[in-house]
Length: 58
Image (cartoon, rainbow, N blue to C red):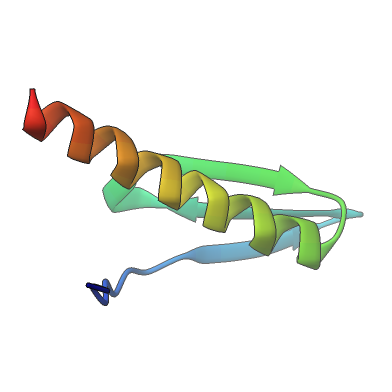
């Protein structure tokens, strides 16, 4: 079953770096390209929720 989760992701570009911050999850990431940033912030969100799930099952 898939679940849709809405969240605010703040993305900024400074010099040659893109950064993303998700305040309600306390996640941040910084990469040289926008595509790398999106890919890695997506992975960080997945890992966050996998950890949350494992803690709730313990």
